[in-house]
Each structure stands twice: as structure tokens, then as C-alpha cells.
Amino acid sequence: MKFLLFTFVGAHLLALNSGKAIYRNDNSQRTFEEIREEIARYGDVAKAIIDLAVYGKAQNRSYERLALLVDTVGSRLSGSKSLEKAIQIMYQNLKEDGLENVHLEPVKIPHWERGEESAVMLEPRMQKMAILGLGSSIGTPPEGITAEVLVVTSFDELQRRAPEARGKIVVYNQPYANYSTTVKYRTQGAVEAAKVGAVASLIRSVASFSIYSPHTGIQEYQDGVPQIPTACITVEDAEMMSRMVSRGNRIVIQLKMGAKNYPDVDSFNTVAEIIGSKYPEQVVLVSGHLDSWDVGQGAMDDGGGAFISWEALSLIQDLGLHPKRTLRLVLWTAEEQGGVGALQYYQLHKANISNYSLVMESDAGTFLPSGLQFTGSDKARAIMKEVMRLLQPINVTQVFGAGDGTDINFWIQAGVPGASLLDDLYKYFSFHHSHGDTMTAMDPKQMNAAAAVWAVVSYVVADMEEMLPRS
Image 1 (tube, rainbow, N blue to C red):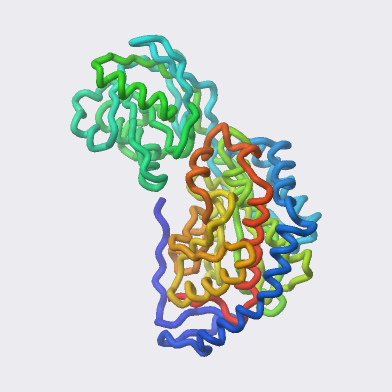
Image 2 (tube, helix red, strand yellow):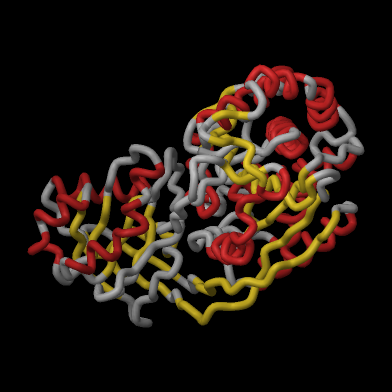
């Protein structure tokens, strides 16, 4: 995905009081020691938030709220009736929770349905294979596609063997390095296979661990390149076929996919606030996405992130806290299709970009937090390190790099500081986009800790006298 870049005029940062400059020529009006002392004074408030979330009446609340939603509506694919039902339920939930300015912001989102799908290995023996079609893929003809397989381990190998690919089904058995490196085979695999004349592509699931579990996700066609059907297969089947062809076996697969793309449909981003007591026009944004893929329950991706974001506001409200800045909760729609709802939110609100102090997105699991990922200026990072010290009671104090997220990257690329929650990514990518993404993957105590981190960080940044500095 490409993001918009903005050029900021001048060396100072726009922020604080209605766009007044708080940094000029890289010199703060306050010393860092003064800022450190200000943050340290939030120790008692942070402890109260932690106690309420982890040990008090609010413990397990985010887990129970999430379970109720996903058990009621299930998965929430972009364009589906279940997503729209979930949005309406959340709208009512946020109003009943007593949050302010609860409203729905209209957006247009993609509508794709997978339909019936199957893959059967016909040679050298019969075996039905587990598959999940990839988002935006076209379907096959009703009779399916029956073709010999070409197994490759990389795009480079595909190019070297391009003459062998014409008329075949390309199977990618790429090794898993990490998600960001390996996911290009899922997003670009069909295009690269089509360029060399393949009739379909099957991609080894982008997963850190597999128990014969296919993982879906979005894929992208390219103008001027033929569109071919594409799906993910299990790690086990990809490795098996790789072994087979290394022995000289000829593999033939029959692939059937009923996938269809429909015109964009109406949907909503869901918004609620605690309005700031002193600088209401300034915003700290906390968020997760409400949509999911159409397998499992979407509990982990990203029900957990959406619900700890709601929980952060609930905890702050329960304690009667009124931050100086507005805390804004956004539950995004159509994140899985590339941040579609988030882009439209950005386009609608970017005129007020100087009033955004921090944008936060939880979309990498709500397991036991390791710390906070952060993108921003050196001064802002130093401040965030002091904020994270307040979470010493639960031993979550580290600040890492790369605080990006699909839904907040528009703001980060434009210079707004951004933060995301970091936890066990190995576990996350074991369940990611699979049938295993259910409440069984979630842990209420770990969600409590994640919610505490989210609430402390968002409240303190929203209540400090100055906005976070930008570079």
C-alpha cells in the first residue's frame, strides 16, 4: 500500500494550544527534566488504572465483551451482513457505556465472497487438500482448472524456470522468515505467476506454525497482467509437493473456486470519545479494526485490539478521569482490504492533522504485552519511555521501534507520532487469518494487561500539558 507523504514547513512543530508552536529551532520551552517530573506525577493514576484493569472490577471485561460479540455475529468480512450487524451492535454498546459523541462515519468498502472452493491432487495419488481462497481473487470456471503443478521456492526461481510455467498451476513453497518479508508471496504471487503464463497459483500459508491450517488474506492484481485464481494451501501440503517433485513425481491438481467480486458497498467507521477538558480540539486516537476475514471468529485479528481500545476509554471513564485532550476511539472497517476505512477517515480529518498528538492501533494480538512500538521524533520517543515507566507494576516498560499499523500509517507518514502494541508475534501468526482465530486463542488475563497498557499510555499522553513533539 502506498501512503501519502506531506512536507511540513519550518523546523518547529505545530501543536499544543490551537496550533501554537511549542518547539522552535529544536528547542523546547520546557526542559526534559521538567517533562520527566510531570510524567512521574501520574504514578498514582497509572496504578489506579492498572489495579482496576488487572485486579479490580474491570478484570476480564474486555474478554467477556469480545466473546459476546464474536459468539453472536462470528466473522466479519468486508461487505458482509455480519460486519454491518457488528457495527450496529458496537454503536449501541458504546452509547450504553456512556461515552461521548458516539457516531458512525460512512465509508465505501470492497465486497468479495469466496463461495465454494476445493483443491484435489489427482496425480501421483488422490488427496483432497485444504485451501483458503485469497481476498479479491477471481474464481475458476465451474468445471474448475485441472493442470500440472510447478513448485518453486521464490520469485527468483520462478523467473529462472519461466518457460516451464505456461499452462501450469504455480505452487509457492517459500520458507517463512517473518511476516513482512514472506507476505509478498501472498500479495504478489498470482501476478508473478500470471506474468509467466500460469493458469492459477497456490501459496504456502504465511504462518509461523501450522497444524494443517490454511491462512487467507488479501492479494493484489496488477493492471495489464491477466487475473488468475489464487489461494493459500497448508505448509504441510506445500512441503509435501516440494518433496514429491524433487523425486521426479508429476503432480496434477484440480482447483475449483467460486470466488466473486461485487461493487463496493456502504459501511462505517465507528467512533466514540471522552471529550478533552482543556484542549478538546486536540486528539489522542486509540483504535483497532472491527472487520475480519470470513474464517474463525476474528477474535484475535482484530477483535482483541478493537476491544482493548474500547476498554481503555471505559477504564478512564470508570475512574472519573477527564484528560485535557480528547480521547477518540475509532473502530476501523475494511482494514483487511488494505486500510480502506482508515484511508477515508484520514481524507476526512487530515485538515486537523496538527491537532493529533498520538495515533495508536492494536492489531498484532492482545497476548501478554512485551512493550510499546513507537514511531516519532527522538524527543517524543524519550517522552514515551518515561510514560512506559509508569507500567512498571506489570513489568511492561519497553519502547521498541516501528509503531506503524495499516490503519494509522496515513497519519504516521504525515508526521504524527504513532504507537502499536507488541506481544507474542509467533503465537499471533500461528492463528492469523485462519479457522483457528477464535476465542480459544484469547486469554482474559493477558487482555487485562494489554488494556492496562493501552489505557495508561493514552490517558497520560492525552492529559500532559503539551502535545508530543514532532520532528
